[in-house]
Image (cartoon, rainbow, N blue to C red):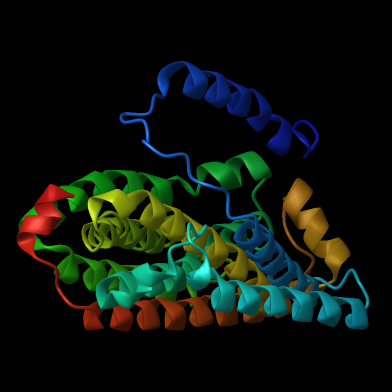
Length: 321
């Protein structure tokens, strides 16, 4: 973004995607071929896709008005109807797209709910930090991107460690602790100012990234160990779907809090070019930013409570997973 068009943010990923497809075709093999070919749940695929797409699109349009209010509400209603139809009909399908019966497990349900809440809490945080670093903090896009490194570094370092700790201590202890640490980072970010030293921003990002890393691996371990081995593929699909949904909901919920009082042209100028923010928009943006981080903090605390309430699973299952 600093030197060339913003479109390269997307074009950069094209060769990586092509490489991933070729590598997958070449290296990935089915460990065991299924004896019977399963049918495709077309009803589930259509209703779930339409339901999620419609609902998330409508919520995004409420955050960033591009369609008329009537059209947005119509899309939202259609999406919700499709989701209700999916939930009602899917248990009656012989080979369902999503095995809703897995949610009969309290551990599986609460672990996924805490993951969803965590996704909503932190999904938009890095985007908001980009706006902050390129706007009030006055950095260009390249520098702002590099300044986010403490979050990613903490997540990558703590993630593998938390997986090993989960095998020893169990995931029930680690998941609420990780979410609590992440919540402290979000609470700290709700107090930042344009004159805050970078070491303080780095500390908050390390808390958030490290806490997320401490939560992610044990929570995944808990979800996978709460189901039978032959249903772990379905469980992983549900986990990824809810994580992605949480991140999309985060943008739809948190972004309007931070950006609604700031002119769109001013925010686009900041996002594409960086270099500072006009004083007329600065006060409104900082107020909205603090509110957005406080809401994310509350969601992270809610995720921590849900994680603490879930039952502990057996040590034997945890090691097998």
